[in-house]
Image (cartoon, rainbow over all chains, first blue to last red; front, side, top):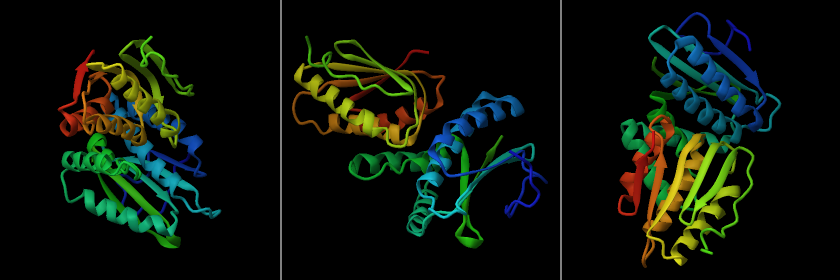
Length: 168
Length: 126
């Protein structure tokens, strides 16, 4: 973990992230990073509710990033957490395989046409109606349970950055 | 012995599973593995099939001690409720015993309830 002033973040809430981590896209790391996020938010902001929201955001964004990372040596993930005292921002940068990028764009666009609760319900209905398909509950869950809005930015070298921003 | 009580409980690393009564299953811990269906989908399906065979009127799934799950695990509860909803013959009520203190349970079972309310009940223990 380190603070870094040269992170490829286009817009910062504060001059430096509170947390910056870079790691190989391995499923085995997710539990530990999620629980660190819980501890960090609980300790820094003192609100168990925010700590729970952080867990959902970190778990689901990292799961997506790990599942769909390319096999390139440049596919390390970056997680940062920033705050300006009123808002909190979780940001995950990854190098996805090309096939995933289109479906991610579509999924994000689709859920953002509905309010978070409606989008979560719609994802449940889709899951129930498509029992053989993958769950695809994660992004809608991040918005609703995590209390954040999601955005995606395509960066140089094929990397993408998913940013989740919400109130503290 | 009821078929429900005879269902083989899977061994998983992060979640403890117990059949605590002829119509009750209790799960506690966390479910965050990549493919939780590998361990749990067949188990839930076996419980569902056994409950129908035993002609149970209610199955209690106590998830109050399940402190965190990923969305792939939530999907398994959606599937269970959907099997039951789509059942043509006599069916049971699937009662999820939940905790108000666990965020994912509040949001997930609210959503699931709106989808399958004719076969589902949600009870809060804390």
